[in-house]
Length: 126
Image (cartoon, rainbow, N blue to C red; front, side, top):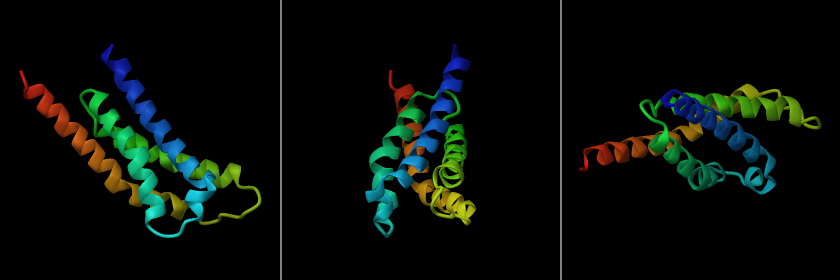
């Protein structure tokens, strides 16, 4: 039962990464905004709670969710650049993968760290 739960949490982390990357490029109002806030506001509002819940309910290795999330975001950017954009040539999509992972690292890591801290506090409480 525990292995199935860990598998589910890892696959949810992968799907969250894919969904966030594809949605970020597909929603015109988010991608049209220029600046740092166009990346961080959706990440704080959507990604932070998702990664926090994954860290709270993933089991013994919540930090492994980050690996699956970043793999999912790389897959999402790749799918969006190679399959969904037929009118615009996005030849530098590999740099977009790297930059999106770098920009989302503070939000994803802080959510996972807070989730691990809450889990530790819950386990110590009687």
